[in-house]
Image 1 (cartoon, rainbow, N blue to C red):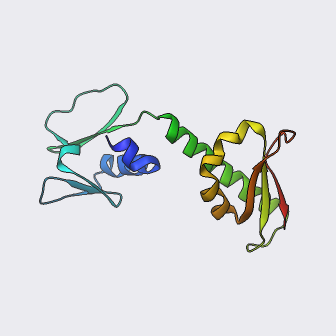
Image 2: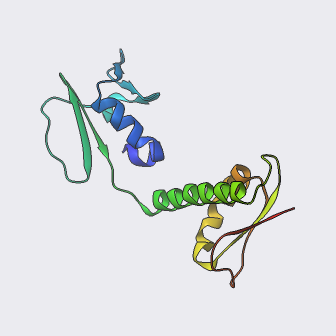
Length: 142
């Protein structure tokens, strides 16, 4: 239930719950790592092992998070990895923090164009395109 809603925040929420860093809310929900879990997302009672779930328990509160990654979450993770790689490239090439770039992707990263707006914003790109001849991501200052 929480995986699609929380996305990349699941590990932080799980870590906070496991460390006992949460707040029980009056409606039966729980707040952990800045995220509010609704009462129906919180299991109370005996802890059980569930395949594909991460479980944390403190006293009478147990929380189980679905940690299975679907295709959308995997693609989002690849987009974050690309952003990190491109920002490293910016540093390696000596670009100023405010320099704009044009980003070229190899064909194997074509599916990342679904996240082109976010990638563009994060790396200060004026454009993101795919070049069938590109062996890896490439940046050019504009």
